[in-house]
Figure 1: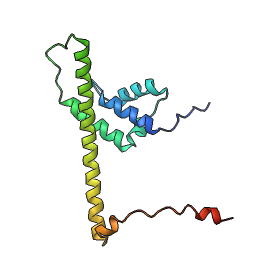
Figure 2 (figure 1 turned 90 degrees about the horizontal axis):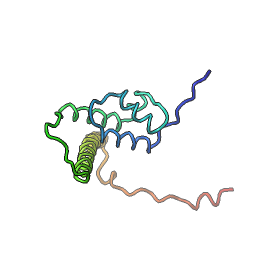
Figure 3 (figure 1 turned 45 degrees about the vertical axis):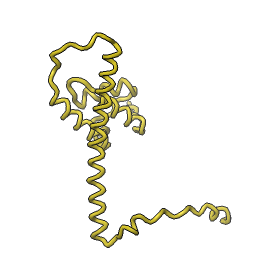
Figure 4 (figure 1 turned 180 degrees about the horizontal axis):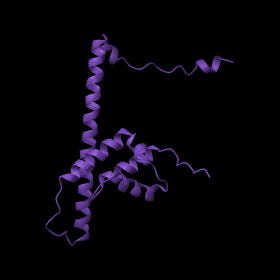
Length: 144
């Protein structure tokens, strides 16, 4: 009997995985992450499928490093629900900001590589900054 294949990952799936990683607490492993995402998506994907997306793999590694450095809190959590919710939201935003900063650093490294390679090939800044050509939309109307 043939097993049904899970549907392809969409940008919404990737966003869900990144949000899940941003809010992750406790021990983080690929299996635990896949279990959590299976609950949300209704399909089980492999570690290799998720890790093939660079933003997910980078977010996983970044979150794993961040969780290694955290120690259990010795103080109790606040009793006021609004304060507790605000603190959790602040932690989520902080985790997301750290992930986006790491992603941005990777993009800056890629840009530097492109700039260096363009310079080696004799591409000038004027060539790189040239505006994109306008699409010729009338051309398809004349063709029969």
